[in-house]
Amino acid sequence: MAESTFRLRVKYQKAGRLRHLSHLEVVHSCGRAARRAGLPYAVTQGFSPHMKVAFGPALPVGTAGLGEYLDLWLSSYVPSGEAFEALKAASAPGLAPVQVKYVAEREPSLGAALTIAKYEVVMEGGEVLAEGLTSSFAAIIAEGVLAVDHKGKPKVFELASALPKEPDVCTIKERTTVGLAVRIGERGSLRPEALVKAALTRGALDGRIMSVTRTELLVEQDGSWRDPL
Image 1: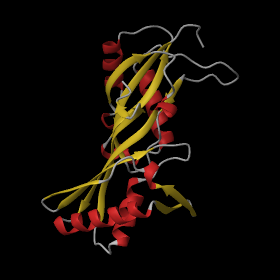
Image 2: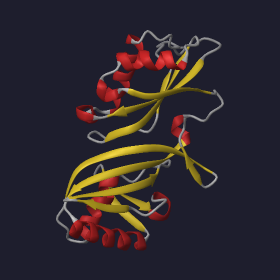
Image 3: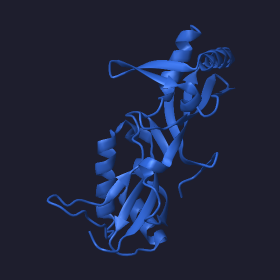
Image 4: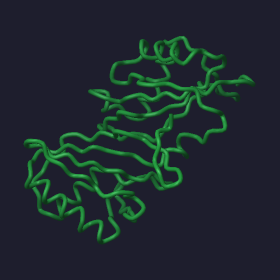
């Protein structure tokens, strides 16, 4: 890799039909977009040189993302506005960048910095479902722990840490939306649909998840949350 590189942080979306891409497919697609954009990307050293790029926490297949992040290292400086337009023109609409900014090399990696994820879960059902979910969430949180199945094995989350704030439940017409914030740690994070399904089961509620969207990824610092750009 070149001695002097420039770390371009890209905020992008994963939306529409492309929410069904795997994380590896997203990585490959974003890499191809950077090449099509003609950006002077840096490469790693070693026997198998490849594009110097790092991604934030992976999204599960089927989950959309409105504010995902990657860091792309460039071997020469390109004005951020020019880099943004080139990437946007070279990207599929469902994986389009929404903002870019250069960040210092001393900044922590995305994997280390991004520790809060906010989600929106949209469900079929009106006020009765919302009231039942609110009661079920309160009961689950009061118990302090939640065991979920993870690849055939039980995984236990301490909710005081896993959920930095209580879920927010609201209803518009016959749709119920659950807003969740979860903490990302070394052992991963509690998937929002797992918590919602646990609440449905606990309250014997009739509800179907229509969509799950990660709306934000945030940096937790000194008791507050901030955008990584």
